Length: 212
Image (cartoon, rainbow, N blue to C red):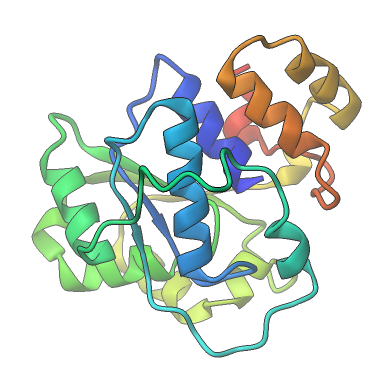
């Protein structure tokens, strides 16, 4: 789902993706960063910086192995690799380099966002809003994976809007048929991801269905 959200924003003429950061979750931050780089290379967006947070030591779920098999572009592509800079530096450069205030879209735990707000207070003033894929309750992985980060973001006073996959208005079969008719690299990647073994139901949140 995170890949699909990224593809939706990359393909939209109404959004400019300034950077992508990854955090430890179902996939390790490092694995997710390399997959994001392959996705950007496949779609011709190699110039967008990608940075990964440090991996934690907690045990991964069985979903980890399945997500690692999901298609995200040319598997052996080495033309794009994560930034050597920290997540905070990459986010700071992106927010300061934007003529408008930036909107952060968080598809996972708020670890990177909380650390950025704490370590880069001046840059974080350039954040207009944080849109977070979460139910924001005790049953949601993106909250329970790092509750302290959620509390820190709320305390910062920066507007935080949680959107839930339950608001999806397009069913999975319809999306699959739609993807197959998209004769573009974006459509190819979405079609392949829709056929992966594991996917959330509903497939896409209201965060990205608005772009189709």
